Length: 106
Image (cartoon, rainbow, N blue to C red):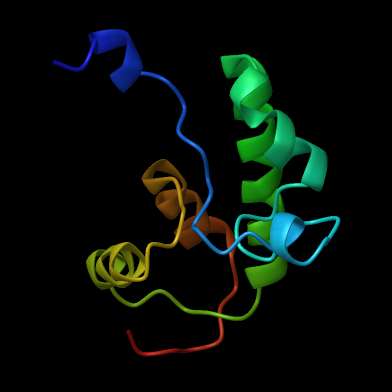
């Protein structure tokens, strides 16, 4: 049986295509963590993990700004789930309110 505390821990953003270990990249092409963050992830505190995830979210937001228009949040979430794209559902309303988008039908 899985302990309740394990279910509350912050999960790794790894999507299984790590370029830091396979190609020696400084930043992983998959999860966008620095190589030292990948190596030390399991020793990080919850606060340190959250700081890394917040940095990745900010990077993602900056890279995608002005490129998309979300027509259906539900469809976007379904596609992101299907492609195992790491995201925080709580940020979707923020994106809708702050981004200026180029129209893309999802």
